[in-house]
Length: 311
Image (cartoon, rainbow, N blue to C red; front, top):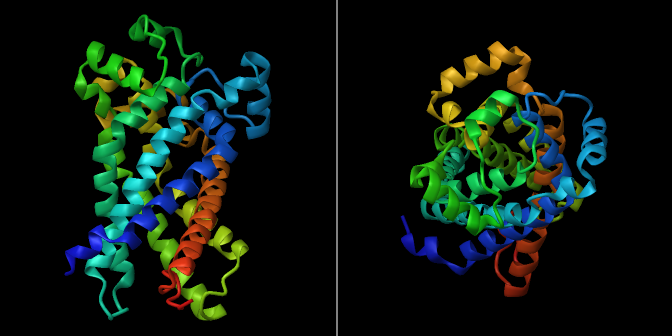
């Protein structure tokens, strides 16, 4: 095991490329993420067609509501993707061997460890981001009473400071337990993506994979992981934005609450915009990431990280 690879320039290139790709993709598809968050948190908002939901939100709160909280989301995503891509590629380079028999198991394990590191380090950013994005959201009268006079946050730093001061530092890690379970989401995504990319490389030969291929396999990998883990994401949103009473409930109790109030379909409320947003965002992110990495390594004159082809 070579620990020097963990701090290599190549690992840093992967991390910066992943962060840049994630920010680019989220900027394009952010309105879909806004609708997904609203549907998960606002019990009064119907789970209608995605574009009808966007139209309704624009009519109620203006077009700017679709981009509310964009800056803190991009800040959080940039940090999160940097940490994840750095951890994933750094750890994988440390344990890489010439054997290809257990690559899927290796990638799944490394992705899970990278996910754990990412969750622990960046959950406060996502808690603050959820609060900022949901300012002005419609919630039930019961939740309004329990939430009390929640302050207006001026930005991500202000949100973190106010949450810590008024609710305690532990509130910054609200929703971390389901987030740890959700490590399975990027783990599945990256494992499926790397497996599909390896097969595509074999079929087309070398580094001749086109942009469309990266886009498609990125979308497919994210679709699989999103559908399998979506109910946990609903619980996570409830914990990050919900009342103090909601935060005191266990994951199983929140599952029961959602089913009791909205039925089993409540566990999949907002799935349509989530599928659209995450698959399109992931597809564009992987496309940008692969092209940035390939270009940087081309300039460096080293092996292409995807297919092992020299400049």
